Image (cartoon, each protein chain N blue to C red):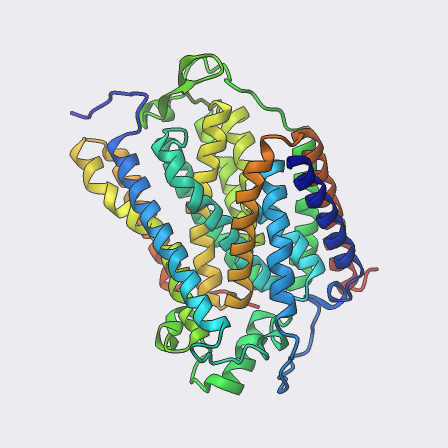
Length: 148
Length: 325
């Protein structure tokens, strides 16, 4: 039997979702300030020197990746998908950590509300939440590729 | 004090706008055809991130005052007048819209103004299509995207110019789908000192419209508040406050899916992303304070004028790159 009561107050799932979203957002933003500070003030060394980055940002992304790979990274494949994880000891790629947290927190929010939705008999919304987790995970996985 | 702030804001916006107009950067942005591997550093590398920070700061103010998201201003303006390629501008635009939504989302959900039940079915459609849009957008040639972006921005201008709003739409009977999913709620309306029971109708039609909205959000890196609100409010019949709040929250899901495609493709340059996010956030912070005394009608007209100009610039750039102009 599902709980169908509608009140002025936000539901338990909504509050849980909001709390996780809030924490993830704060952690992401705080880390973004820290990692960018390490990068821009030269505390940590980047792969691409800061005075050279302006040479690349007017190029299409593929040309940019080829250029930085040829000149600095020398990797077997272009640095797409999750390959940045292997480069986080460098200041510029370390900045991808907060970006990934900010982009990933929604997946955690959705995953967290699924058990509560099932427990309250709200099967339709629970299935929608699972579907959303799968869609976002697929997007985050790097399996889906496109490009000029 | 406030008048002083407004004057300062007005003159600052104008000066920056003029500076960008005469900047040669717009002439070559997104139009680099051949791959070059430069070897020399630029001693003035810090200039563009700094200008980006200042421009996005003013953009954040205008976005709040004009009632639009940061993404819809960011992509056409930055791609039109900065030396950054459209691939990176779209990736950054999505992150700008995403962070704005992440910052506002928790408060709106806790206040029960953003409705998770209304957002969830819509988000499944919009985020799936945002992924498709992002993949198509990254696969198409830049000049096609530039031209389509310009046409889309001009379309947004028309929507902003003509869209009606209804504070509390009259929904006689919810449709079967919204009844089955129990998309309904109650919120307190202080202006009437009354609790408002709301429900929605035309849910299948609304969901179908989000196929297009999600696709465009992903393709152009725009937040989609400009389209979410009219659909939730006028088409589906959710109260205006619920529509605005749910739309803002919805962007945190739609833009997340598209942002991952851009991040995985490598369209993220921290030196562009972080100054943009800081600028927009600080600007929004100030904008909320100015909002109390500003004339919203004037600001809305200003936003429409800026978008009209940026849209025409994008169309011009697209046609020029194609060799038509």
